[in-house]
Length: 166
Image (cartoon, rainbow, N blue to C red; front, side):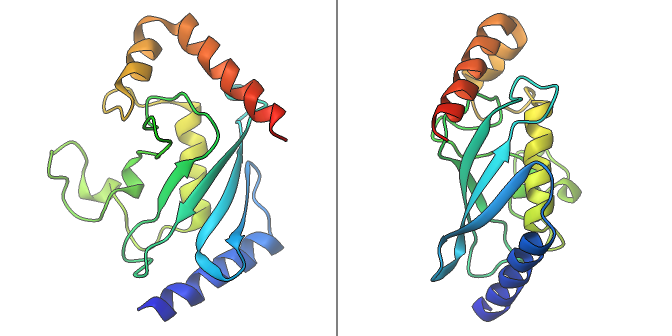
């Protein structure tokens, strides 16, 4: 199973190097480990995150693509769908099948057709439009709904800090 994952990840990395996609860049954390990638997401235009450069680690399981990777921001991130430890919480990163809590449809969850590109585009979309109905960070979601100015200030600090890290 791991050999299938290795071949697929090598192909996806090669494709991204040959044909970069607007909005993010990706590479290996360590050339000897295809299962751990460094990704940088560029804050989408016309959003609160515009101008930011947010780093994350994408970790793939040995049985990829049958199971989803995990994505964890290493840059500071204030967002309703990002846990305080940086882990991204979006439907396509949830294990395949029915949602035990009944919130998501099976069709919204992980399927093996997803690629690094589709995952990253989903995260960029998440930055553009937070889902505060099912938050990973309840405090950020509450601020997003009730104290938008405070939310904007915290995001602005994250953007500035990400720029200083360049």
